[in-house]
Length: 438
Image (cartoon, rainbow, N blue to C red; front, top):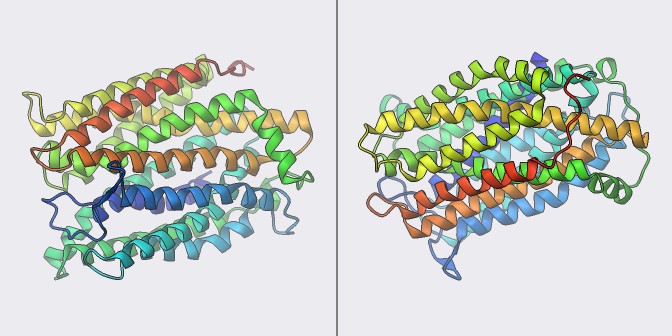
């Protein structure tokens, strides 16, 4: 379980570097000290370059998902269906992650647009080749429902630790400038990404070389064609309800990760270094609720906890709209909001993968075919589309204000997140859960 969590931690570091830094680097607020790297011109008055570029990269990646999933499910590799593919994906993931933040020109230039498109597509495809087989291991490694929750909890611990590491990005960049003599802020951020990418690679290698897939997994290669596998997956009504609710949730969470530095520096006028302390606070508070989530999942089931968490997260988003408007100290406002957000995020980081593992287990029993990777591919297809929408919608709303004194676009993201979380909760009420006492 511990070895498995390291893989998620490494992937989390890479993917959250994109979420935390990408928009801030390429679409910086005026008080950031960073240069504009790509055009700020909008298309049809609502689509800016960052929104279009991230969308194109994610869409190509999402189309690729089912193919790597089918390749993994049908693999006859004597060393296993998952681990060998994961090993091949690690180095390309690290290289492309670094190159995203190393534009060819450190000024606004059309070549940076082309560079960002190519490197994003390369990163998404290579990181997908790791995470799809990785997630498909979960239902194979964990046999019982309790084991699935435990393994999903360890997986979530890894993901949250990855977020915590990424939250230090701006602190490390500042230290490199002040203590190591790095001349520019953009160079300091690039060195930071390089350091974190190498660290992420070490974590991913721990999983790939510590788990003996042939020893711990009992599975047979799938024999059905990709088209039929997708049809069977998409005809599973319970799975579709899960995916649609998941979709709304991930759009809203992407808005938080993309917007945190804007909330801190623009809405509240606090230094960038506060972002690190906020993420540490969120991690520590969420860990308190991990065992609580595990306990209540056994007692009352996963569905009720997910519904409560989505509604509480909706209130957190509503709070974002009012940041800086209340007669309360700025740091108190943001710390309180982050501490409350940690409660629903604890359960929403653990339970969805455990729920999906149970859906897959039932499907494998009913169809006599092992399609673990296909299910995770379809789920992550929608997750990636959701993350694309999240970044794109956040960037698009910034058109209506992203600077001190002109911040309406940032605040509108709070309203958007509020609506999306309520929508996710409404959809998930239709989900049919397995009896928690069975």
